[in-house]
Figure 1 (spheres, rainbow over the protein chains, first blue to last red):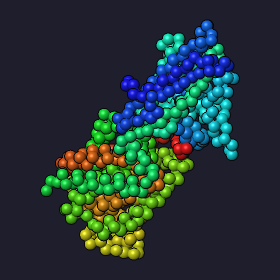
Figure 2 (tube, rainbow over the protein chains, first blue to last red; figure 1 turned 30 degrees about the horizontal axis):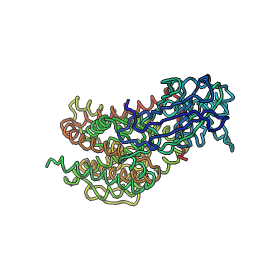
Figure 3 (tube, chains in turn yellow, green; figure 1 turned 90 degrees about the horizontal axis):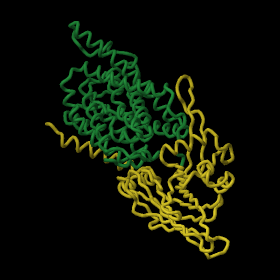
Figure 4 (tube, chains in turn brown, cyan; figure 1 turned 90 degrees about the vertical axis):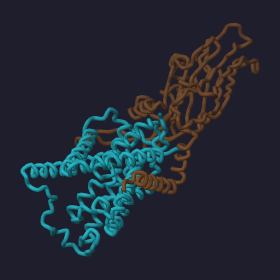
Length: 257
Length: 307
């Protein structure tokens, strides 16, 4: 796998700025824009991070790092099939409202080992704890974790390589230097991405920094995709003209009489 | 070599899609059909959503039928007046089809209706073709002349009012069945992503008694215009036409068709019809299997909108 040129450097610096928060995460991104070309088949965005121990403390703390990457929001319907008169038909569906099209949670060890369930839920850390609101009647709310539609939704998103939770994706190069790879699959949605880096120590979050990333697609394909949505009629006429041209061209070059 | 399909939102191997275009083009040239009923299922099979497959194949059929129509035009083997008459209803059928397509998609039942339509139509038409050609084959074995069956020259179809004369086809028929056939082909084409040539040709022969000399050329003109308008309508309403996919299919299809035509000309008519019948029937069975067998995953996702 090739590494993408712009790397994300996450640097947690030793503080001294304020006495209460000794560690501070400074996240810098060498490039806030990832351009996906037509031959794109998926790549990894590699962030590195360095944590220098707090100058005021002699004992080094054991750090945990959780990187949550969320893509542009979308509304999706999860449909369930049932057998009706011998054939399989979509009978039931749930709408997931404004959920991330892409959601990746990377950490140095499974999130359940990093903090207590209450902390994880409050901070929305991990796929199980991330809010995925469903439209239920007139209300929009997240359901219990083992709701069959929620489970199916997350499973399908994982199959599409758009959701992921990995407890081994952030690695320590030294006790204070991290390295993580954010996977970007070929079907990565374009738009604004939020990268949220949380630093934990002893089961509590001690620092957190948000940063952003923009994924753009370039080339003729993206131009076509935008035209298809924005200028549907003209796009259709252009495709129809293209069909006629190729049809005519075929009859000319293969003319046998 | 991987290429990204912008609307299908999927990377595919360009040579795989080109090969499919060539293969379907070959078959379409061999049998004188558009090949949509093969192309759409193949695209669904490689993971393209049925909605995008149906909408994109429409433009592919428009290209291959234009090539065909030009060839028949040069031979003066098409009836423009009849084609225009069929077309006036065909456009209405296409518009109704595209409207229903949109509604069904909103109700999450589009894939089901596409599947059911394929099963019903293909197994019926395929079964009839097999029966017909086996009978012709048997008659030929017994030494009887294998003439095209044209029973009782006048049926109820010929008693309908609003009669019109089509000079090139040398027929005098009511406008009602002409419009009816045009509407059905336009409608079915928009829903199923097929040009409908394999339906239209038998309908024109059996109901309207269009002579074999003009039937294929006329059918191609109708297919061309309904599919070109289906492309525009699908693009304008559902934004589902994948231009990159369509382009690869068109190029493959147009080339493949040329070789198919040569192979087809070397084969006997009954043998050709039997082969086509078997092919149509097999695709129908494939869809039936899909509907009846428990799917690997009972759940599926559909994007409602970007926020």
